[in-house]
Length: 165
Image (cartoon, rainbow, N blue to C red; front, side, top):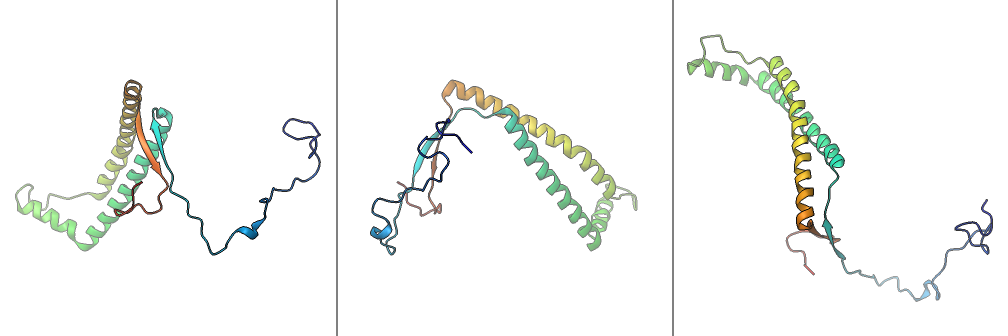
């Protein structure tokens, strides 16, 4: 229980419930059939700095998600192509074109998957570091030139025919 006169608690209302204020004339003046239409609001924001740690976390999450989706998609495509006989047709085509001897060329799925699983995380880390380096360059340039001005609007319809204010 809060004591009267305590910080943030008015002495007159301490210890009892405070009613929320009603409009002075009540709701009888409002017409329920009339809808109040607010004008869309626009604000201009200047982006001057991006936190490097936040950029690293977001880019790692994004690149890792892309890597997982790519890896799962590649495995599913490989399994589908193998069951449809497409991989055997590619191996035969390579041999027929003279790039390999008869019966010597084989695409090995498990080895390709291992290499992708090793190289993929390295690409994820390098891409994230490149993103952080780009954010650091942006932060330096925004100190010199003042940042990027972005206009934010709360339009509901963002299609090509939306009205501009």
